[in-house]
Image (spheres, rainbow, N blue to C red):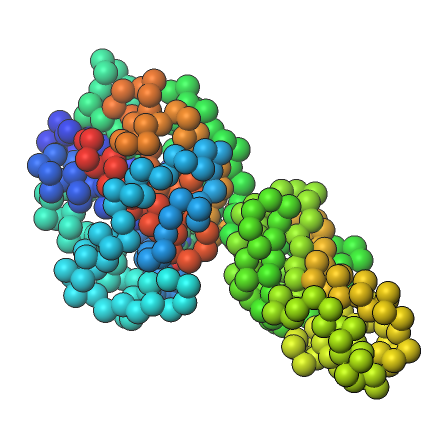
Length: 390
Ligand code: FDA
């Protein structure tokens, strides 16, 4: 790689969400920044995010919307660079946006506008870019070297392992390990789960969606849609739960989160001639109602069902357990949970405590957001925290 001038204040590896904003903010503070990426095109995940419209933040983003071995780590950075700060940048560039649901902000037009905005901001900060060539980092005499360029600071912004075909690599983890930093085991997150054995029958519902509340053994219940697929379970509620799910554990689905306890016995009193299947079909898609009713094995009219059986059916519908045999893996995961341990980093500057000058930001760090614009917000806030220290 031939890059001039050879001396920079910082080299940032990874021109994704976090690296682009970090470069722009540091450049605009007068720092000489070299931003490198092995991909010829910066911000590829931004381009495909949010179905091409980029859910670039969530106005409600707070520490509770993130997973990390240290749930307090993100607090300070989140407080110092808020969704309103990023929105001000979006507004400055006259990018039209709308709130879709649950505080999720999307571009009206295209995710391309967000990448263009970040590249404009980099240009305004005089950032030097080198895209499309492999990056090799050496550390000598207290400086970080990339080809002929060197700097006293290096920012790891190469993201997680999700979607290798978009250029994801373990570069940040490997480099961090080389410097003796601990890694929290990376796992696919926001990922569809697969079903097998007796539960494989649910895959015949492929394409059926329903509003549910889904939860893993740890983590909250997410009230969003679940979607059955030809391989198992997906949809926002399942993707959210998947971030907390570990191999071998169950996922619990409440198929009727809006019904008050006792609804089934109350229905028996009100409509003794009805059936469980018919009642379910009032709230759920027909095919799902059929499958659940068949599994419950209560085909007779409600009048002929003992209260005890109806009570137990109601409980099962409110806490249906699936035991996925796996997930669709990093090839389909929207993000990676785990990464460079926050115990190694300053929450103020994202600098490694034991390697002065080495910073890590974005998805490479063990902070993972829920679905809904939180992962970009973490990319922005960690970028801003590091940029202030470059
Ligand atoms: P990011 O992955 O953006 O960038 C890393 C960069 O490093 C890439 O440019 C890559 O080429 C480069 N790189 C990797 N290895 C390298 C190496 N060895 N050498 C040099 N460069 C290297 N989030 C959200 O909040 N709202 C949303 O709408 C979506 N939608 C969405 C859809 C899909 C399909 C996916 C896969 C993900 C999302 N996300 C999301 C998640 C979001 O895209 C993700 O969390 C951020 O892009 C992470 O930003 P980073 O900058 O940390 O990594």
